[in-house]
Length: 211
Image (cartoon, rainbow, N blue to C red; front, side, top):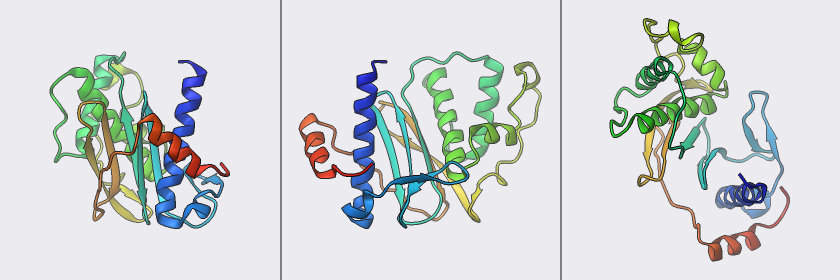
């Protein structure tokens, strides 16, 4: 993809993050530098809300909470190149993470991507990384050995910072598939961020600052 397009998307994502954070802590504090925790989770250098973001295509998914762990992931891909046995194992693991929500049956690609976003959301909420999540769910190693492997219990994974988590799929009007991992008692308020060029330029003017 063109570097200029990637740069613009990165900038707009950073602006969106700063403005949403500003609704919680004010614009000046929201301009504080970002730091990365020992587990790889970004946060404001000053005390502030928890957040998680994910990019795919031209879309950004951003989650913010006043406290508590959270993680999000979004996917817009239209193809997936993966051994069928590994894909099925990942879908089984994702079903174990959110047994109350059947994976979509509209297409193989959409089904897999929805499964993958669940795993990524948990990896971000717990700060363990996707590799550790795949290991804990027993879906690593050669694809030939995954068919008869039992899926490990997801309950022990769905805990972060001492709080039990739940995983939910997010409905995004067919543009993408996405998932969020949050504390079980958390409420989710899904909103659409301004996206027109005029609105974005106005936000850029407002949000200019450090970082």
